[in-house]
Length: 160
Image (cartoon, rainbow, N blue to C red; front, side, top):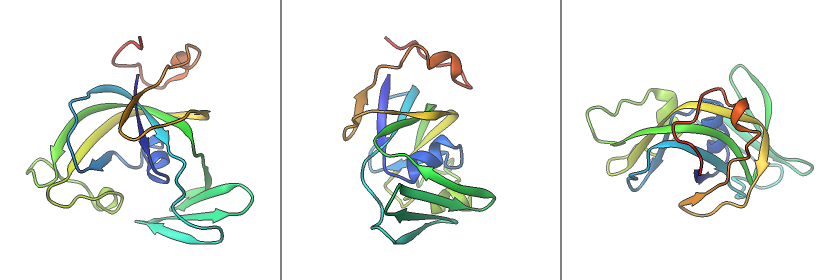
């Protein structure tokens, strides 16, 4: 399966279904089931808090990153792991008339003219993130056979 490495907290916000678009500077022809990989990059230093729209990320010295937001308990953000599987079903230029992100979505990406918004639906969060070494750009990930029956939505393509 094709996998995409995304920085935290965006990877987990996608996996939780809060963020529905990944914004990038280029388009992709890839469609169908994709894995979302949380990269290793940390968005802040130990003891620091950073705002991401209405969400806040804090890095503590013991366990890494915590995400806080409206109506949610502090959520521990995994890094270096597959956190969800979703369906990349379309891409649009951000200046397109069909591109209409709500305020929350707009605060969680770069929707400036010239960028692309990749719409990801049918997200299945992986409850026990699977450690994986990611890569820049698209890369291939072997889906564990025992994971497939646990997904909330069926895969749109059969993993090879």
